[in-house]
Picture 1 (cartoon, one colour):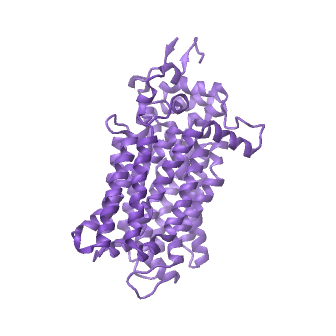
Picture 2 (cartoon, one colour; picture 1 turned 30 degrees about the horizontal axis):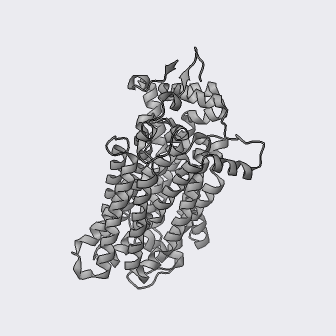
Picture 3 (tube, rainbow, N blue to C red; picture 1 turned 180 degrees about the horizontal axis):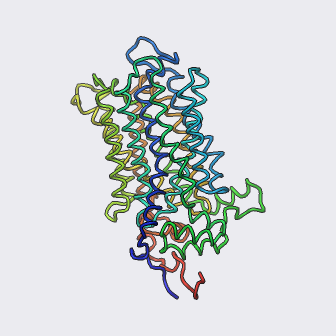
Length: 495
């Protein structure tokens, strides 16, 4: 018997393999670019949308109404629908086909949103935007997780969040340079989102399919070709073992869909519940709403010129994403400590904001704006891309995209509610709003400390073989390497 080695030499890449791997990452994170651009462009032009579509615009300096809040919450509804109904595409037809479908939805929706002057047509386009981005944000992390070398999974998946931040920076800077004050000029800056989605649409099907998807189909020949294209030689035995086990996606094909789902929940209950908890906390802390309504929030915090501060939001998001990308694979930091640190820093910022809003004279003038920006940094570093990394590692290959979709569907419901009520809560009782978010962030810290494992450097199937304890690789100390990885029985055979 021999053991599978994970030494760097095993994954030495040829020039062609390096190009293919870089292409897989770069063309797949384009969906993150679209997502970040849409969120932040909407922050800058929401008042102009309100004015031109006559949603609730009046002469007040800041105002809100149901339809204005629905501009953002309808995207969450679309994301919810796609995560409930469309993630099966990734299991049936492959990860690339699902990403292609998401790009089609995004391109069509952006074209409609940037051309219609009808309020119903505008909201239909926003719904389709949500469907496309919701599907992309389930399938893209799944694909990146499955093509990444185990020692670089954090880098690969967190690059998607870096792309979100780059898109956000574009969205925050472009409105300042375009004549969005003129009627309907915001439609031209919305249309820019079609460019990265169109590029991904063209190139994604030219990239290799996820080798783990081929393994789940039992297609060893296609699996070997995908491994060769990506240079994942050190994972060959692990993936062949997965293919030989016959743990295909329809592992209960003789049963009804409902019974298959119940069987999957029962079999993988613990990783699913931990993943669901993390996704729920990530949405419940309300950072996407804080970001989207940053202009009005800064006004409430007595900032005289919020527009001058908004670009800082994008730069702090980017700093947080870069921190997560560099630290998630680090032995000194890792996934679990990033979540704990991010949640604790968010708690601190929420507490200071609540105190400032309750006792404005007790807090220095610059501190509230700094807390808003620092909170966004902390969320991006501690939740953002890290949640997709942790969940993708926790969930077994046979149910990864399906369970990730279900976890994100619950997160979408929470996002919808928060998007729809955030400004109403803020204007009704800002102190209670941030006290509530502070309590949620503190609860997230204790959840991560008690339940979140750190699977950096381990095989994707490690969660099926060891206890999901909170101490990372040490939780697997009692397991021999041969229990976590396939071994060679004879020439060309896998045990």
